[in-house]
Image (tube, rainbow, N blue to C red; front, side, top):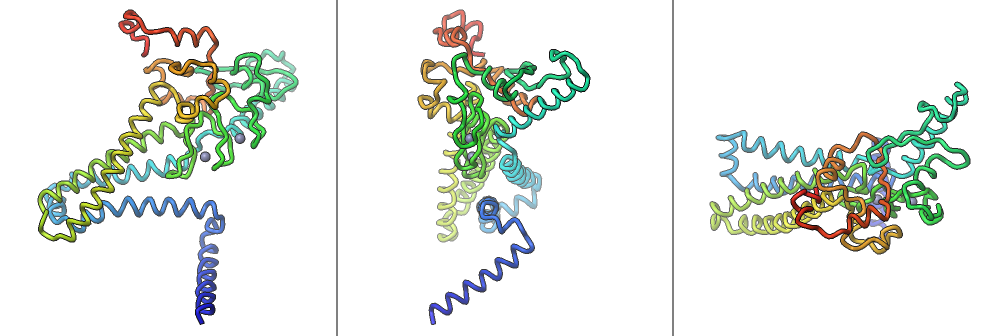
Length: 346
Ligand SMILES: [Zn+2]
Ligand SMILES: [Zn+2]
């Protein structure tokens, strides 16, 4: 009886699922299904905390009627946070394969144009162009793909392509790139794979990720203040409501502490031009092994780091060259009074 009932339920579920898949074809793909479930859970979670507050807090509803702008700003922040979440999770972190494809295609096009016009190879129109450390990089060479040559020039001489080729994607990785096993792709300037967003955080979306944490922290702080306000004025009115509000406030406080620490951590990473992966797994990265602990090889000073992080999107794929030994020695030099006065760190 139990078995037949279970079988009947399973059949009903399968039929309902097939019907849904017909209307929404994306549901038939397990990866897209789990991504959609994650996003749905996030929206529900975001609606739950303010929803409970507006259900139980009559003073807040009164305040909304008297001062609608207060709640309007809160709702605006709420919507902006959700929009930022969807934009960040939908933005490509910058995959190495895409960059390679773009560079090789532009190189092939340049070669075809050169052949057609029969101009010398040094012509500017026929070169591959990509941003390397802020300057335009032009190059056309024979006997190897444009990408391999471009990447190998970013490393100090003596390194073989085998050392920096990803065993999973078979692509030559530029410095700071790493293979993500969740996405199964190599990511430029890999920071970490974010389970919450369901994507990698890399060169293409790190700035957006920072803004998302910032907005989420502000929203969490504001909601916590509203909860504290309720408990201050309504305590002992209904014990069950107090218990619910205290539990929600506790969960909110834990999230707020986590978000604040995450925000501060990413501010530090941005100011020193590091990634989470470089900071945590420094000894594992081949080209970082010989570099002293307190030297950040890609650090260009706080102002330049901030500028590149916020506005350095003039090229989709921004490559960073590994500094030479003399440059590393200069970075490792201890600070003097003159360095502090001249703002060497900036
Ligand atoms: Zn890879
Ligand atoms: Zn990933």
